[in-house]
Structure formats: structure tokens, C-alpha cells
Image (cartoon, rainbow, N blue to C red; front, side, top):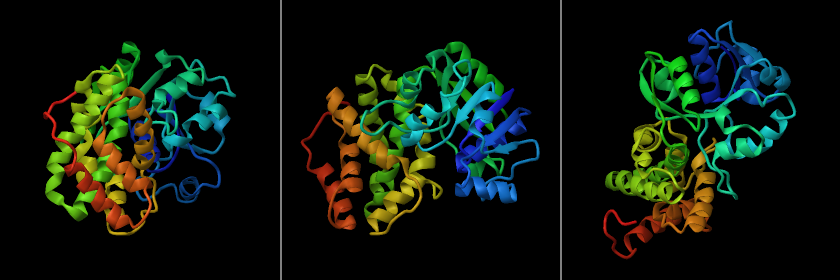
Length: 324
């Protein structure tokens, strides 16, 4: 297959590396002048992977999107709408799009696949590829499980069957709403986990339980299957998000609780704001999300704000454990 991977940061470069190993013709695209692209251009590698000679590295977006059968996108979720405006200037509506990214649009609460549909791409041509796994583990040969989901039963089966290997076992997703919301929301829980690593580690067990339940309620209210919150996209990704030293979101929360600043991208920050939009729209209580939002966007001392956010969760009125 001819595949272009748009975005050559840590996850995009891994995807290009992985798909090339599968025997596909791969173009790895990055914006000229960006640090990630320039490092690959100069050295052919980054801190995670080494691109083999079969991979074409390019900063020509038109070439990347028009030469591919499948377009994989791996960029910051908040930049997707503007990026699609650039992509759709070219003849791409017959292409398959695979979103290897996790997020919800801040301000609108739109899922990423919805942004593609609003950009003129048919739902039958859109898939998402999410789930647990860190590049640092994959490149050492440590396998994991992931999920591919789509409105098209044919497409998700085609992609999962084509992309499977002894390194990644894929499952066919059954609920695009739940898969996307769950994948994005786990980054919010990752920030909460980082805060707890500093302030109250024993609460990470309850965080896993209550966090999944909170996200399940939201998924159900949005018309999805609440059981999706307990699948690979959300609960199945907790180990690599809530406990791993490689998790950007967990590290962001940890450093914030220490009064420090994390300089890399933590998607859970913007996702917490997007989930606040959904909380209001669907009338669903999201107490952990609310606490993370206050931690990320509140005023005053960072350490005090983190401690107050945890305290606020314990002063809420009592509820039945599985309340709706």
C-alpha cells in the first residue's frame, strides 16, 4: 500500500517506521523548519526511531497527500481543523484517512472524525487508530494491543487486518463515539494521575475506577456504548497513561503539583476544556474532569490548586457507585 504519514513527531515517526516494516511504501511528511522534521532530514533518526532508506521524507504536502492511497494523520488535535483546510485544497476525497491522534476540539467539543466529515471527507473513508502502547516499548520489541474503529465495517477490518503484526495485535472497534471520546479522555485522567503521584498516590486505584465510570456516563449520553469506556481506547490505555514515566500527560500533572512546568505537549490540557463543553451540552457530571480543568486553567499557586482540586472531590455529596 502507498501510505503517507502526516506529522513526524514522536508518534508519527513511529507509525512511519512501523508501516514501512510491514512492507508498505511510506512517505513521512513534516512541515519544513519544524524541529522534528529538520532532525530527521539531517540525521535520518530521532530519539525514538531510525527511518530506513525506503521511507521518503518530504515537506511537500501536495506530494504527500496526492501520492498516497491511505493518509495517516498524527499531529496535535487542536490543529486538525486548520490542517484539513490545507489538505482539502488537493484532490483527496477518494483517499482513506486514518487518525492516529487522541483529542476533542476545544471550544466545539467535536470529535476528530467529525472535523474530517465537516471538511468534506466521507465517514466511510475515515478510521481512527488508538489504544495503549509507548514508542519506547514498541521499538524494544515489547508488543501491545490497539483498536481500529470506523463507521465502515469494511474499512476497519481492512486496516486492522493489513496493519496487524507480532508487535501490535489489533481489535475491531464497535463504537466510534466511545472509541474517540475514551481515547481522548484518558489523557485527562493521566493529568489527574500525575497530580496524585505527588500528593496522594493511594488514590490512583479509585481514579481508575471512577475515571472510567465518569467517561462511560458521557459516552452513553452522547449516544455511544458506555462499555467502550472499559475497552482498549480508555481503560485499556490507563497503564501507559496513569503509570508510565513516558506519559506526557502524567508528567504534566506531576510537575504541576510540584510547582514546575512541563514544556512538551500534553493533550489532556485542551481535552479537559473540550470535555467541559460536552459536560454542559449533555448534562453529565464529570467531577474528575472538572478538577483537572481547574488544575490546568485556574489561577493562583499551582501546588495549592492541585491540593484544593483533590479536596473538592471528597466534599461532594455522596452518590450510588454506579449512578447515572
